[in-house]
Length: 338
Image (cartoon, rainbow, N blue to C red; front, side):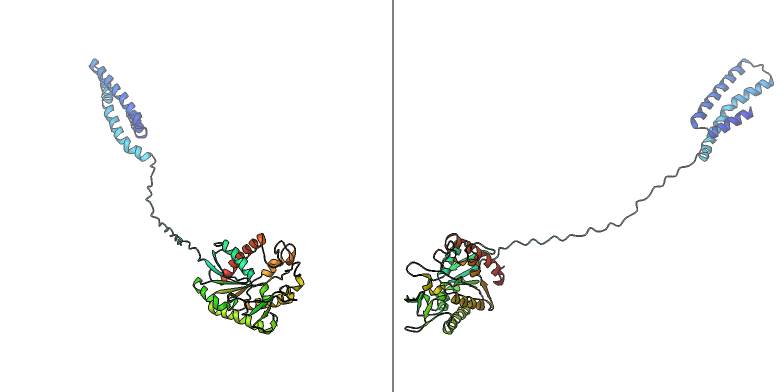
């Protein structure tokens, strides 16, 4: 009997709580049956009475085993340790501040003011440029003061043909360019575009009844350079752009081309050399109009460009104006307005 209870006790220590409860219930039922039998057999032998007492105390012993089974089970069951990790504080790198670009309001460049001076070639080109006003980068504003038939030198009389010479006294509007341009100071030109063509190759008289002279002679050269310097003194901050002159081929049935002195290749070459010398001075530049006209499909003698052999006309004049505007955009850098 004691061996049985020891076994029960061992079972209680090693078994799960549910199994122990089942055994306890069975033993209690057995004890109840034993008491019932003892009540019926009162005259039992001593051996029988000991057996009945054992069954009576069995539930108490099992209960004690159950009480000990809990601690024993906790000793026999492997313990699982749960490690609670504390959050490790981390250093967050600061987000770099991105500097926003400064938003600068776009300011339109100031208009470029261009004063066009010269003879009839300047007057025609200047009138066309004025119709294109606002073109270019920066925008261009033109003022045209070209005077047909007026050379740069302050001459008394002029003739463009010979044999016989056709002299004409120069009007006051052709005298003293520098003095007449004083009135243009209020326009404050950034660029002065000087376009002189056939008049520079004409025969001149510098004084009444004076000798015939021309651009190849020292007196005309000196007077021409002096007038250019006087104009420069009136506009010391302007950029002077001097245009070369293409050779002309004027002529008609009445006056053939060989009688027109303005068609002289030698005189044209001398004038263009002077143009380049003037353009080489400080605040100066050159507009190669000669090279532009020479690029015509039939060269400098292309009558589709210059029907009269002297002046650009029609589409050719319009295209020349567009080309000039493109060149002036380049000159704007020197005019400090780019």
